[in-house]
Image (cartoon, rainbow over all chains, first blue to last red; front, side, top):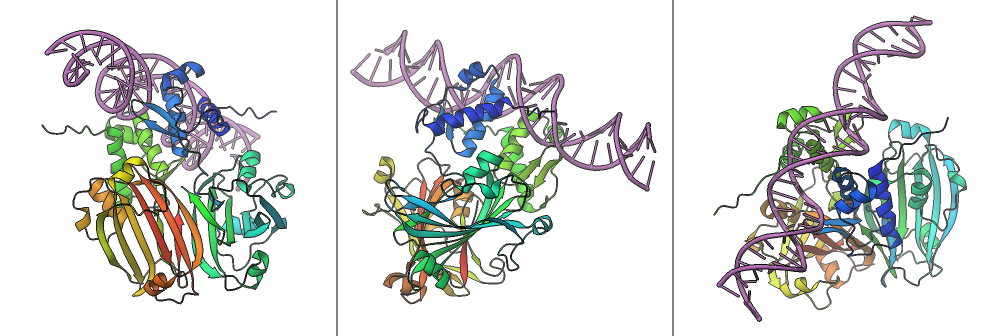
Length: 238
Length: 238
DNA sequence: AATATTTACTTGTATATACAAGATAACTTT
DNA sequence: AAAGTTATCTTGTATATACAAGTAAATATT
């Protein structure tokens, strides 16, 4: 009894074009094939092709211009997901490494958890892990992550060191972040954080708490992070 | 020679439903009329109604559920626009006031402007103003704003004290923010900022630089802000 | 009473078609 | 040569229709 998994044409068009853009075959500023050309390629009609293109436009991969065509956009870090950049044009030749301080473990939610949980979520518990990120071997960002405990086969054993959490969730479980909120403070590091980031307790750091919702109803991602922004900054595109 | 301004049916559907949601006639969790009902109301077909509904879903006004209907979402602060919240559930009974330190003036871009400008933008110059926001009469956030100098009739004379910049742009000029990026640092206040926010220079504050793109090609909004997050935090929904 | 099944509603995917309107280059007129 | 026109490309809006598939309540079966 195989899962017949109908793949829809418009989704195939999205995936195809998305991967061509991500692979760099279409570069920023390029025009995609016209709607009618795509219709011929996929043997379909404009309604279906337009469904795919408007979705790509929505995801920020292209912008559409009346009478002109679909123009490939600047690659985005995607849907408000926070990324860490060096002051000098992106990470560039800097070395970004990640250390897992706490491997993913299933546990109950902390009593004083910083966001409200719905009933099902509270009952199911969570997966917790923490990571420390370095740029050129200097610790820069400490992050604690709580994920709602839904069925994610083999998640605990996955390697979180090199790949981003979001890539793993997308590639292995087809989970994508849909929306979220974040709260931001500037604080002085406490003893714990100053030790982790190797800074004085008078050093200002960014403290951020985020809640991200995904396309999986029951799965939310909560993270609390502390960042030393002396040599770097936190960057966020939306 | 009047401008015939064809209004499109799908846009009318969007505006109608949007305003009903904003007015609270449809509340969070309510179901909108089904696609077929809307077809009858507007004497059109599902393709057109679906174009409107998918747009509303995209703007975050509704979520759509296969086999169920269109569910009205929680009102959002909108597209990654930063808002300022008190630690206790929103602003609530706190008093939020704004002081204009520098009224909007047309001027050339600063030589050391923090974002790259395109040619047309650089040539046209900018509108600059700065504001200081207080919560319960305590200064909390200082913001400098640069806007590309496109034609905004009477903009300089508008009252920026009570209404938000985004509301003014939307209501009077039909300009809406489409996307943006922001960079975040934690720093110690310099003399200028510590004076404005009435804090010591050892006090950690959030420094944020943002670039927002609008539906008007030539108009971008740049802002640089400094926030004392001791009693409040910066909040961002996306 | 508990469990399937049917039915009627909902949204999702798709085809086929038509005309409007913006963009651009080729062509014609002045 | 410059200016206006046309032709032809592009995307935008819209109608009409069909069937697939998720949801939920009514109905039939056990």
